[in-house]
Length: 268
Ligand SMILES: C[S@@+](CC[C@H](N)C(=O)[O-])C[C@H]1O[C@@H](n2cnc3c(N)ncnc32)[C@H](O)[C@@H]1O
Image (cartoon, rainbow, N blue to C red; front, side):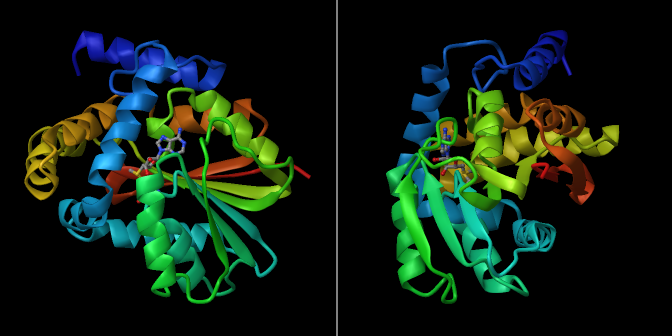
């Protein structure tokens, strides 16, 4: 890692714990609009091909990570679930259809209407296996729901895209009921250096190539590479969760730390 990049990741790490807005592509301090507009524009353009890209670029491994999310979330029959940055609904529908005891209801939310449109089409085709879902445009940094109105919150590949990550964690904490759980799936930092070098090379070269071919929008996938490399590591995200009040914060690495699943509890 170059000195500049190390400094940027350190800035982003400080910001997620202490609270400051960053440019999610670099980790440098910046107005939140820069990142929000860029991310919104990327996802509204690629919404229709997002699922195909996910499957091909991860060679199916993404499905295994989702299964772990379902296990760690351990939904209960009375849970009011809220999925933040839900995109096309993968986490919502995996939890609805694969949990031993599915939640009572799911609010599927995202700040990009085009992604939610795909989620809604999948729902209408039966993806939630009978669990009632509602769909709403929501910015995860400013959630329009009451305090304590959710028992389980999930967020997959969302936190990295929020310029104000600290505020987003505070919002999830506020909306959870006491005893409620927050489960975050996010790309992360492989602790074993040779694996990390290989992974970063794959991100830099293959992701823009595959993304460009499948969606015709290479720049969105250059952003994906940049934002993953500028995102704080597992330990820092855990500290940030604790800094807003969460307890029992743990994480499990997926595929040697390419991604990590954090889970945290709002105390009773
Ligand atoms: C990589 S996709 C992940 C989608 C889905 N969770 C999944 O697992 O496939 C990131 C999503 O985050 C959404 N997003 C980015 N910033 C957001 C924000 N501030 N509030 C809510 N959603 C946001 C994007 O619109 C996009 O749908």
